[in-house]
Figure 1: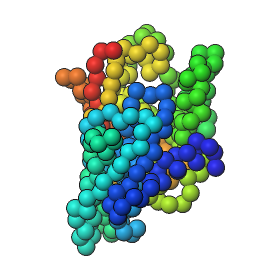
Figure 2: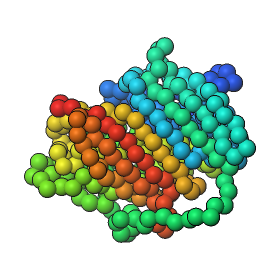
Figure 3: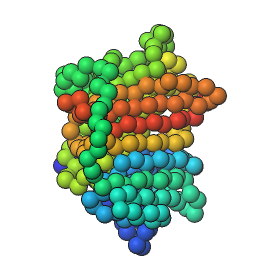
Figure 4: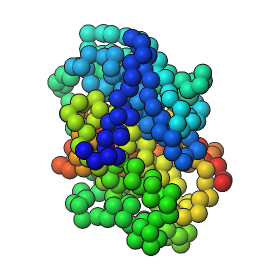
Length: 288
């Protein structure tokens, strides 16, 4: 297993310290705050570890209340809200140094056949992700090499990310850009066979690029930053079983940005065009 993929699996392998209490590690990295996808993924692991294995998660709704501190463990407290015949509900609070930094409600559903089945197809041609440069390679080629801090972060990135469109590097590239983006992603190595790990890894990945759709009409995705941003909330619906170590297409768009907040929506498809998950997130945007 690739080291970065192994670290992701270890990050999602929480320590159970009581029946409904778990502890997760937060990597000590050169970031201002703990990565939101990490906190959401770990919270979903905690919820899933208190739920019957035959009930996969079908939705989650979460709020980022305070920035988490890198390098400081996070405790996840699970409330068993409901155990019904078909649905199970869990509420999770993430606590760091005595303060709640994140809350999530997750719903689990025993699979069943329904009378309605349809989906919208991808808006973009699927193509072949193998023909696209990775985000790291594209940045390295454009910059003539990566600064040391970015090189270290790239080595620890657990997902291979490949943009369908060329990256925007200058303000001139941004002019006239629509608030849309699409990337191929997959874990950089195998993640094992636990379905919950794959779902939680996808939750981790879903926070990596989604708010880029809000930024695209305003600033280049790389280079000097004009905006500070932070995730406010995050919601996901899981439609089909997922393997996060196989290629998936993440289509993203921002229908509105106003009042200092930007909304982004995402759709996640597999290589055959099946819709696997839907994502919505709102972020806070301020001038840097």
